[in-house]
Image 1 (tube, one colour):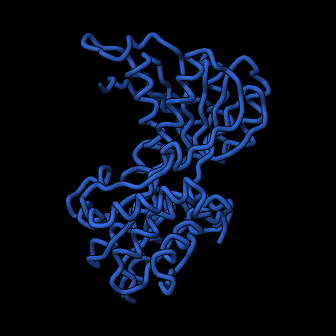
Image 2: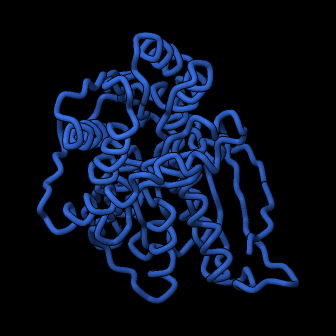
Image 3: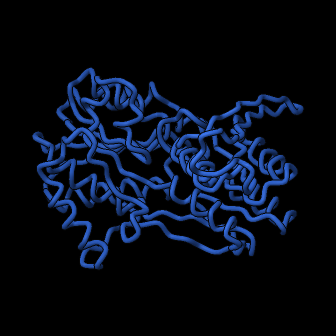
Length: 339
């Protein structure tokens, strides 16, 4: 069951801090709320982004429900917040702290070294330290499957990919998507555009920019667009609604987070990146006594990535997609990690 959340706001110097503590309730079936203390440090966008951070939040909620964990959440509003938030969570007595996103790499390296008795987790990056669990995903594998879905659904033979920052991580999404589409239709045209260069954090929240790109492509005949750009993907969905075309979500099942029937009507599928599973398993591991560091890979073999079927729009070829999945897991298909 879902725990009640108490939202606490405080101001420390120039730092904006939002903490969510999970408490127990009289009818709880998942824990008393007096279990392990765990912190989740969101990147920019925080709760409500509908994708990456929300998935991490779901993992924290599961830990609260099933383990009775006390969860504190902090959101980064500016770059300086990342290190400050990790330090605040460490000072607050949390036994495990998860940084959600590769931008936590440098600050976590410092904070983890200064707090060897605390176990840390980082999503989408590797920090080589005895007390840091590095949580890595095979985004290219899940993207291959939604690329195949796009090609199977496309009537025009033209599809698109909109990325956030033009960095190696997002290029894994692009590479897998393009390869999956061409596996189905070698002649398919895949338009690609990024919303910003490496380091441009506005790329993750540029709704207007994504909408402008998507609207132009839809008008030119593209009928399916996959966006891996955090909150910017809302712009693609808006454009898809107006054009009556398809959008593909990312990270979370965006059919379920879209909020309106109009949006649900155009979300073909979503590439599922199970950040929720990674966050929950990290907290559970420490709760069970495993405080060691190391790399954990989430891929198709352990359902760490995948695709959604909400809405029923790809029901006609789910069996075909699952056959492709099996070939990837077996090694018969090798998915590229770069374009």
